[in-house]
Image 1 (cartoon, rainbow, N blue to C red):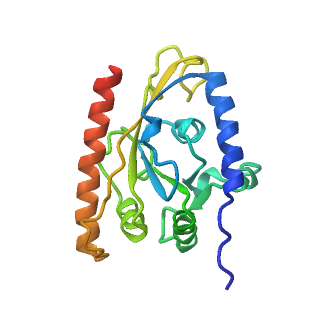
Image 2 (cartoon, rainbow, N blue to C red):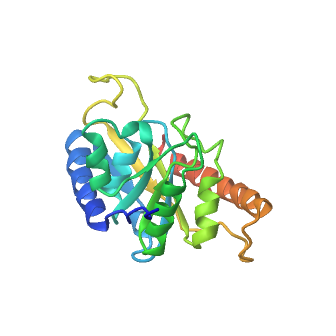
Amino acid sequence: MTSPSVPSERGAEVGRRIGVGLMYGLWRPRVLGAWRVPAAGPVILAVNHSHNIDGPMVMGVAPRPTHFLIKKEAFVGPLDPFLTGIGQLKVDRETTDRTAITQALDVLTAGGVLGIFPEGTRGEGDFASLRAGLAYFAVRSGAPIVPVAVLGSSERPGRLIRGLPPLRHRIDVVFGDPFDAGDGSGRRTRRALDEATERIQKQLTAHLENARRLTGR
């Protein structure tokens, strides 16, 4: 059995440049705190998720190329080779997707940036319900987590295209301070991951509340 290929860093950089053009061409992103993302080494971006453009928005405005874990349902038709080509990771949410897990850990081992929607799917975008995957990747790799709040992407009034925010609408992307999920013991037990998930949820919720105060959203 062959091991999955390591996602392309060069492809992710191409994806970042495409994202820059699209996001700034269609909307008005306001990016706060991007300097908080470590300039080198493995990093996990934990992004709230209330709209389909949240991933492309963060991909476009993040200071480093980002490999997002994306549900396999998005990899349809020509989007499949495109998303793979720009270094994004296909994940089957209905099972333990060992290929996606291996590829995500490979990104971090290589010192890259992994993007995760820790709520697992689109919702209220308030980090109220986290899956254990984020804790697993953070504890296993030792990579710091940078919380990212995307605000304004789900506002409905004035939309010209159904399912998208109004064109030229301001969308705020707020990066928080990096933090470690583990307790320093290096434990990877179920209890350790549960405790890490609780710590992560508190940090992400606090960041989201601070981002809302900062932006007035």
